Length: 254
Image (cartoon, rainbow, N blue to C red; front, side, top):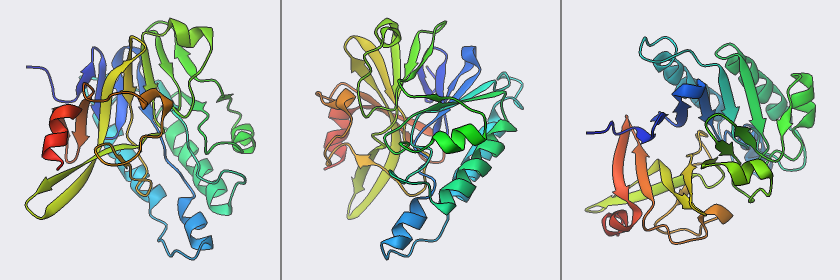
């Protein structure tokens, strides 16, 4: 019986992050730091909880990797898009929280890779301050043939064509399940196919940008503009639960 958190050989879910053991690489997506300040400007009073909750989630993940004899130490952390939230500016909250988050991550790995998301239009000043490069057209792990794209557009690069596995964010996948009058929404990982390649979709690690209910809401990513019935879902709660195919979850989600 395979572990419930194993999405593919050498790839497993640890909390809301993806761990690629052979590459010693941890992948997270969609932090949306600074979201609260934008909401506050719109008159929506939102306490600034996102940074602290993400950091707490990551601290729990780091305890399970590197400090666990069964797993190697993290060498690389890939932020697969949407580190920040504002489209056309860098708010004061974003400056502080993105720099604090990157400093926190640096203490737990040797290298950080920033993949540009659709909310990262003005990320260059932050990356320059930290002396980091932004991968604007995705990032490719040659040895494992894994390509990372945020998911808001389909890359046209040669590396993308060579990839056997694609890992995206952007969609913030979630599933609502019903029990009597009670409805609960859970973040989830998805796995399916895109043009004969394996496709893995990451949940958002943000505490505010919760997710798209795959059973009810309109799908955003061009990678997922297809029949998702055969896609598999791993729901994240106190641990990772394999929930099978979307076509079966639709029956539970009614």
